[in-house]
Every structure is written in C-alpha cells, then in structure tokens.
Length: 159
View 1: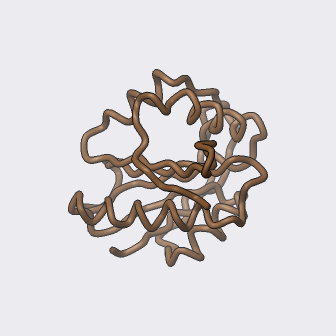
View 2: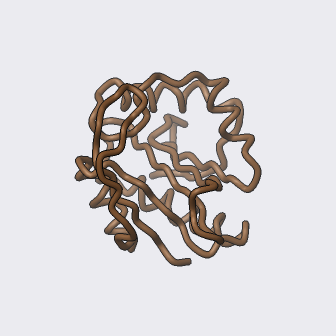
View 3: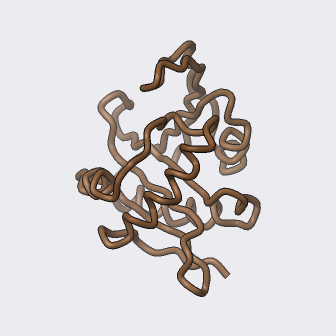
C-alpha cells in the first residue's frame, strides 16, 4: 500500500538519491546534473509550492511530485515535476501523487497545472496524458544544461 504525505527538509537526502538515480540513467528528465539535499531544500522553500512523496508501509520512498510557480507560465498556472523510483512504475504511485497534487494546487489557488516533458520521454508523456493533461505547445530544439538538444512537449491540466 502506498502512503502519500508532504515532503520536508528531512526527506531531501532520500529524494536526492531517488532523483540522482533517474538522472544517472538519463533520457527522461531535463535535469542532467546530480542534485544535493541542500539544493532540494532550496527548491522546497519556493513560495506557493507543494511537495509530496509516496512511501510504502516500511517508509521506503517510492516517488515524489512537486508543484511550483514559474515565471514563463500563463497567469494562474503552476509547474509540476514527477519522479518515481526506477523499476516502480505501474504500481499507482504517480496516480496517488497526482491526486494529492491536484488538491494542493486548488488550495493554493491555481487554475491549471503545466508539465513540460522531453519529447523522447514516452513514459512521462503517457503518464501525463493518462492524468488528463492535454498538449499545449511544442518546444522544439531546447538545450539542456549539458548541451544536449531535445524537443519538449508542454502539457496542461485544467483544475
């Protein structure tokens, strides 16, 4: 059984380990350099953001999702990012996280949630599509921090 709760500063070591494994595998996230717990604590401190994690009965981290404002989004929008432990997809982790994230977005007064996904991340695109996100815009030939060039798909979910 999956338990969803707010993530906090004491969770950032486990969050960083999970995210860094995804970054090291490559090919799905636009984040290309490892992150530290301190960096994640800084991200968590963003005003009007919400961080949630999914854990099993033993308290093992299975995934996390956060929303945060972004200056390039339309008025009333918030950006979402989702990360699920490698090998754990298909167990309802993302669905449970998104249920809580939608609730938090509404409570924070947002009107829509935006996800900007690498166009080559088929799993991510399928996940957001299955949650009800619709294509909003295509962003061709984006440069990642390591110089890799990828297209991105910008998806939007109306609350």
